[in-house]
Amino acid sequence: QVQLQESGPGLVKPSETLSLTCVVSGYSISSGYYWDWIRQPPGKGLEWIGSVYHSGSTYYNPSLKSRVTISVDTSKNQFSLKLNSVTAADTAVFYCARRVSSGSPNDFWGQGTLVTVSS
Amino acid sequence: SYDLTQPPSVSVSPGQTASITCSGDKLGDKYACWYQQKPGQSPVVVIYQDTKRPSGIPERFSGSNSGNTATLTISGTQAMDEADYYCQAWDSSIVFFGGGTKLTVL
Image (cartoon, rainbow over all chains, first blue to last red):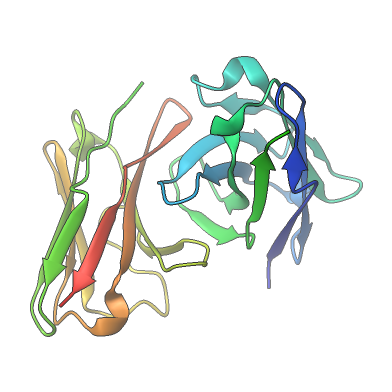
C-alpha cells in the first residue's frame, strides 16, 4: 500500500521559508508519476501548489510560482516543498499526494500537516 | 488561470438525490474528478475521468461532464455522505480545484 507522510516545522515566522518533506513508502518515486503539494487554509478550500515529475520536471501554480520550489530526491524516496517569504495568509494544512498522470486525480494523499505562520 | 465554480452549499434530505455542479470554460473538453473530504481527513476521490468510480466507492455516486459543467450526483443520499466536495480539472499541466461545496444531509 502506498503511503505518504509529510514532515516539517509546524511554526514558521513571517518572511521566512517554509520547508516540508514528503516521504513515500510502498512505491518507488523513480518508477514514475507526479508528486503534488496541495494546501488548505483553515476552513477554506484546496489549492494546488505544484508538482514534481519523477524525472525532476516541475510545474507550479502561477499564483505561487515566484515563491515555490519543489524538488525530488529519489535516493531517499521523498520530495520536498520550499515556500519563501511567507505571511499569515500561507497558514494552512499542507498535503502531499500522488498523481498517476497529468490528467488523473490524486489517488494517494498524506494525512496533512498544519503549518502556522506567526511571529 | 482557469476558474472552477461550485455552489458553496447544497442541502438534501436523506434518501433523496443531491447534485453538485462545477462550472468552467469548456470544462466538458477536459476530464474532471470529484473528491469527498470529511472534517479532519484527507480528500478521497469519488469520481474520476468524469464518470468512473474508484473501487470501494458506492454506486450511488455518479458523475457527468458536458459543455461548461461537470456534475456529481449522489442518489439515495445517506447521512454519511455529509461532507465537503471538490471538483478538480487540469489545463496545460496545471491543476485546478473548485472552491468546494458543503453537502448537508438534513
